[in-house]
Image (cartoon, rainbow, N blue to C red):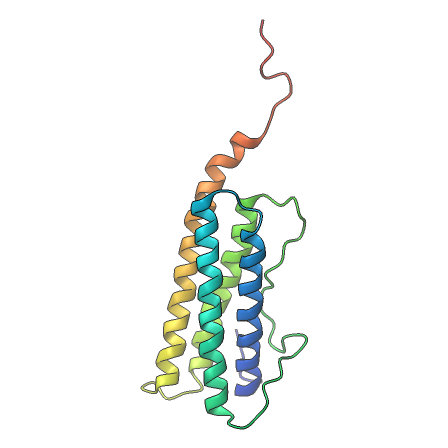
Length: 164
């Protein structure tokens, strides 16, 4: 991903917008889930994205003191969107969409970190957030594998229980 044409301000605003969208996505995803363990994991991801939002917002205020924080309606930097293409999408596909977004967020934070000196707190924080995004990726991958194993059981085959 080449982000060299974007300003640091635009990059941080994009990161903020992305974290808010991820937080909201996970909250809405958790809503209808009945499995307590899965719901708890999804709410954990939502809370993590909120922490990332706070960290990026603090970084924005450090870099641009006194500037009002105004999020763009549409992100200036193209990143994979966290949205469902259809409501009846299998859970495994939902997790796959989220995994792609988490991987893109990881790569994006590593790219943003290049705007800072390697030993700076900002550089280290961005690398830390990037590693957390990959942790989210792996957690989603585990849940996706679980979903793939159980989705087949939810499919009903007509006449499967008809005897001889």
